[in-house]
Length: 349
Image (cartoon, rainbow, N blue to C red; front, side, top):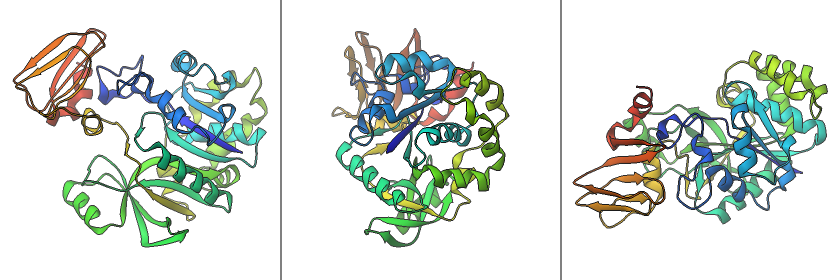
């Protein structure tokens, strides 16, 4: 059976003031479409796996938000982290839990705060990827075809640009950290580099073996807790032992070390919505290149701005060029787009 793991524990600090520690961006209707990013993530996997095979890993403080937004999800499928330990322990927890009930499962792991514009193509890619990992001991990641020399994403280098599976899936040569602009331009020109979307596919036993090889301490820790999964004692034991996990990402722990790593180059209108600038790139704009979410906003003699305000909030903006204007919970942000990397700093003052 196919299972979906959604990682939903991040705080989205670069989307302040809309995203706050109490209600991060994955629980917000960022696009103004009447659904939160988490709800859109679940929706795009429709037909790939049933609701009882969808698992949300989040912070204990967001349990009620998940329940409210996904009322059809079984309570036992909401896994609560008592503290943040990055993506490797997060994934290990749900892998060990799933394998207790479905040791032959195929898994897809996805962040909760990305957007996808071409849902049909997304589902085709994921289903083909699931077939690929089901046929052998393979770890697959989805790589986005780059459209610009982006410095905010990590990259995946394909090996020799030669397909190993039905002309679409390639071996991975290397993972690259976020580059400077000159390097990003060279990546784009070469055609061998893809954006790292942080979406992974594998079988339960494949990723379990990878954890035992590259993170044996984490594997041993979850082995010791295996008896409490799906019991009344589970949360109590997780609260006690989960903080002992190493704080490490799945990329550093496994993806950069394992040899059976493959990448599926894809193009389905993806964005990780990491910043206001990435949101600006994805939503429609008026003739002056202003992107506005909010029904009461008037833009006068303003160009290149992104505006996000609550429904019913009236606002007139005049004479602004390339600004971020966002209001949430009585907090108003007016910031140059070129300074968006400072928003986390602003939110702490």
